[in-house]
Length: 66
Image 1 (spheres, rainbow, N blue to C red):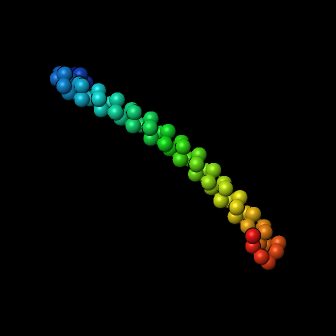
Image 2: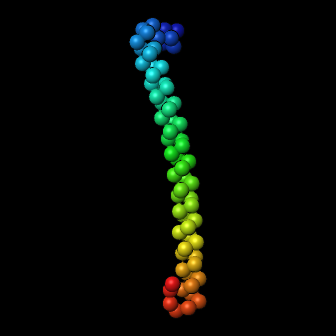
Image 3: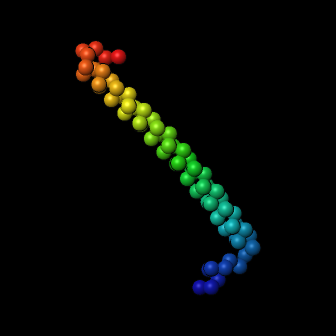
């Protein structure tokens, strides 16, 4: 059981370390992309809702849209 926690081959340790670093970097990049996409989508969604509300208000008040 103790051999599984500490790899005996130096090459395997290097590969595992590289995979851990690569996974960490990938998770950080994905987290940043998700935050950027969420802020862009929320801004776009708010803009679409505002535009729809303005169009509905203008369309209801007068028989003609903008």
